[in-house]
Image (tube, rainbow over all chains, first blue to last red; front, side, top):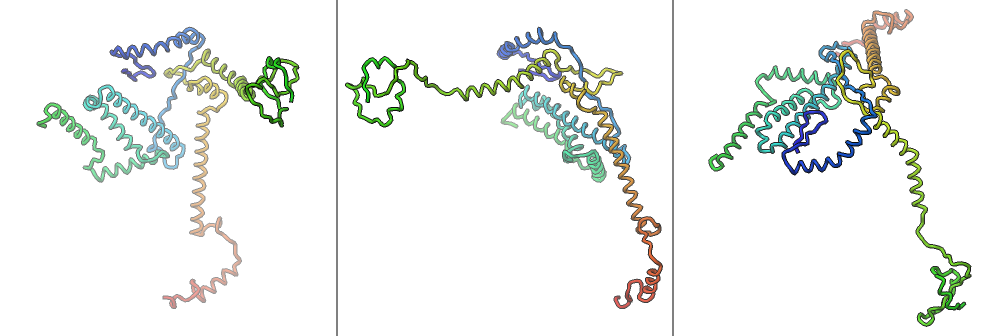
Length: 190
Length: 193
């Protein structure tokens, strides 16, 4: 069953497979009475009313707060925690996309076709770790700020070293893909 | 030991009575099978119908009915009414020039009701917390300043505020004499060096 999660709350239950289509039809037998009841009796007596998602305005971050300004620190900390949650969900969404791509194509083809999604997920994870990693769950915005400070100092002292290694990963993957191609074309030679 | 006629066989005898306790005689079966050694009063044809007890089943259904009527049915009706006639809210984008009220951020109508009438306004609580943080910060700063001033007065001994102890001048004179006699250490230092 091919399902896409691009729209919130809607799943595409269509496929070219006759067997799957018949199974889906079987599910619709249970669906029929419920939708009938809902459309006739329930939807007519209800009135639609809205609800909204909270829109938090941006406040000054910790590097713009004066020393001793506890109110500024409190608001910056709240913003930091909200941003951390959002970034966590972003990494999860990217992981889900890559996983679905692998499910669709299989583990062999997915290595080529899901390369972009894999890279995006990898980048997001490394950036999350750079910013929030190893601080713990009771982290404050000051901890992250100090971590950034130490990282920049280290980068200034060691300008040529690259501990993240994203480009190296890319090269490794390319080599593996080329090896796979050579193997399939001519197993004896390569 | 009473022997009855064959007419007794018309009466169904299910339970032999307790009056037979004590009477133990060898009854050979076959020829004497129509002998009944039970005591009967020939009053009516009804006998006790033996069956399992009904106490526990009745008690179980009684308590079930009690709890259903007290809590199950009212809550079920309430929830059915909520889902038929009211329904959950639908997510919309915030329109421009409109600031949603603090209860309009919830989806469930019960949660909306509680946040509107029972719980306090989150914006108000937030601002109040910020006020308390500010006030405590101010107090902290004043206390730190006071500590610093106290230490400086202790070191410099130039103000009468914290470390001033009024002393009669005779003690100071005695101290001066002692220092002149023995030195500020209390002993001559040339013997220790």
